[in-house]
Length: 599
Image: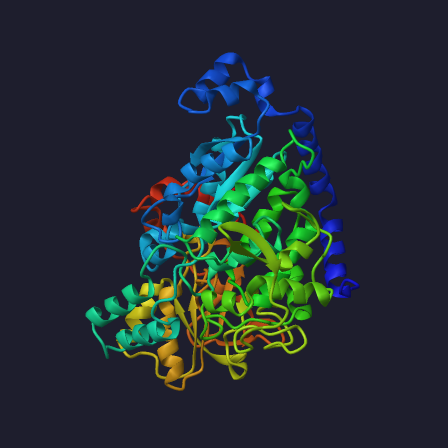
């Protein structure tokens, strides 16, 4: 199938834009590769320290077998990462079977945004991505590893690990998922209880029962938020084994896939015949394929921040216009909560990523010739894994959707275009997720109500102050102001107001959760208010127009040049819950349009 002309054009534009940075990156990687396997250059003292506690000393000293570094984001507070507790033992055993060794190179932090949502700790969330990249860099800097296995699932963890994998692009990188928890209380029922709690119809006891029935065991939350969007990306980008993203924890197939990931990592080091350094996988085509997957699945808006940051680590420059053009070319093929009623387990059962990748390949909407951890080409990603007589085998994936209320072919999608839209106008540039927003709400024009915190919005709601159509502006929420927290805790009250018949929208230089949905939200608005952005000049009552169809975001009938910038005391953002430690991040972070990067 001929590659779609838009996909081809966007890829070419990215390649040309990135020519200098990509060339410099590849030269750096080539120099590291030319040095050969790392351990050969270490002194005996260096190596003795590295092997002192290992039960594989003899194999390590022989320097003939690949040594795989494990970078783990395990903690047992984060449900998605709790299954990783015993992975190192499993990996070491699988490595020995594959004629290799494995060591835990180091751990990285893993924040649960569900725990910090609406709390001061959320202001560290986005910055944690760069901390994860830095921590993984420290782990791999020991320079005794021939490949790396990255154990991570959730929101900032996978992007941070990809940044590290690109930085250490001279060695192979294999990402190892843990899988989603089994389905619990349906996500729409949980949302209904949250809305009822917001209006006082139910109490905290009922709310807690609903939350615990939804988030009830080890594994990723089952809605299609940032964590599960990350897992989709890793398959589309060729860093996971095919079909491995959404296999539940704690069963034989999950363990077999982990063992197979170890075997593959051992097979693609510079010590063998199939050397595949991460830099060769992470090229412009790989990132374009990831963006295609994002649009086709209606994935999280957080990836509009993370993908440019990941790509820059590999010398590739991605702009919002690339997302916009790809979204216009790629149909929306999936309806998974918050875009629909199904969860990721239902999506996987309906045919999942194998069906979707096959459809997009056949339609010319994916680069078929990218390099992956399995070799050249995405054809292998049509397959799905199975256990047969306790052995892992690969079978052809679903040729047809097994549930067209959840997953549809390219020819008959849920929408002709993807789930995200770029916005631009006199208020700056931003993005909106439209896949979960009803078409009649794609255009909102209403008076603005200005707030400087999500807590102030909640207080106004409790006071009954929202009685007419309103565009709620929450400004000074960008990366320089306070780390760009998610404002997902506003979703229930905005949903309640919308359900009462009001036309509501949110405009912010902050973020929303990947789980946010039906209320129109113009987010990541840049320049942010703390950097002189236009949001800082708005006043209560200004008429704002958000037009997702035209891709515009404007204040109507106002000369912003005649207004002074609002002055807000942001000193409170620098204290408590570790925020003191991140002042250097707030001072040096880049704009949202470039991924809000510190490193």
